[in-house]
Image 1 (spheres, one colour):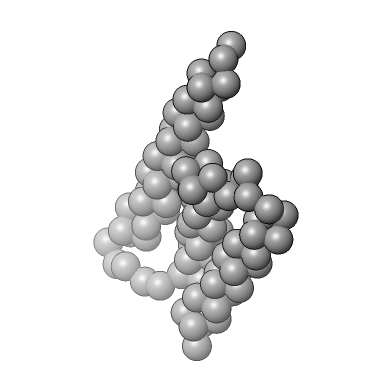
Image 2 (cartoon, rainbow, N blue to C red; image 1 turned 180 degrees about the horizontal axis):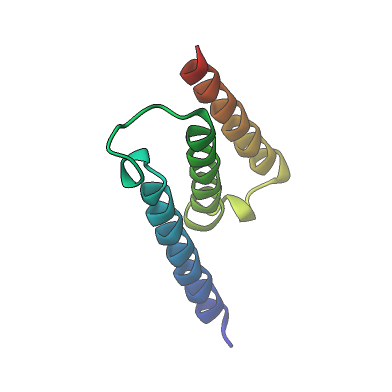
Length: 93
């Protein structure tokens, strides 16, 4: 297996996982279960976590942060964590 074949396989599986997460997050919408749409902190938290997973996959596999220096990999993870917490706190306020 050549390196480009391995990279293509990784990209394909990343795309499949991103698509599955997108469909899963859409399915979690409260309108699928009830006629009344209400805000739900647990569902919002789950969707934000799924979003963080998607962003990390995009960073690592499509933006090639996985081959970047360690400080950049950790910085992007820290930024993503802070952003996730900030968005959830704003949602709760």
